[in-house]
Image 1 (cartoon, one colour):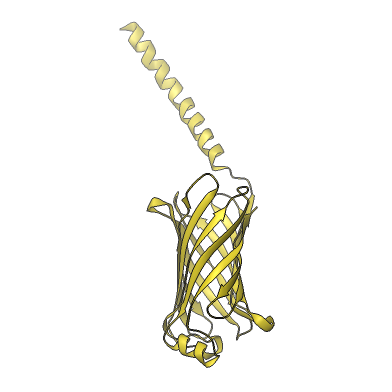
Image 2: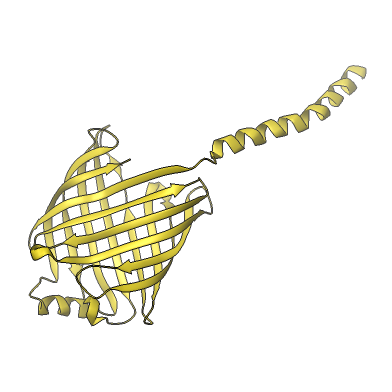
Length: 241
């Protein structure tokens, strides 16, 4: 009995120390230091049906595991120096769970068309089966609303070959002639890319994409002698740092 009492006393005295040790390890694993990461997910030429184009899509963030400043940019460079669908965003990013973050910030549509400014609120994260997801709602300075959603998945065929299906959908509440977009489902961009990772940070790729514009957005495209839908071959480079 005396031995049992001594063991219980030692356990009660050591419990706070063990709890503190666990807390110290947890705090260390969270890594509160400032980090930086950037990725150029698409840096590609598109050829085939419709107008040939160059597309970029990239993002970068700086911050801690919990709080980050997040930058995003995407668009198309067309012939004769024109730029289409130029979307540039700045977000405050806050982790709300192991798998999901919320983002709040501003978006600027800046290209060869009429510029627009939007307030933005969204969520990004990892769905089951490691599907990456982003969904963002927008409210513009002229009373328009919009929503964007994208999904992508990396299917690792070997240690170096990766197949990536991806889709992006854009919806608008009102027709905006200055931006050549109509209300409802305005555009969809989907593709499958096969990349070869020379290293984790550098990977050339090839693929096939489908881009579609619908409703009034499609009519705006036809007025500019552009195809409303197009299937194109793509080749490019994916890199991160």
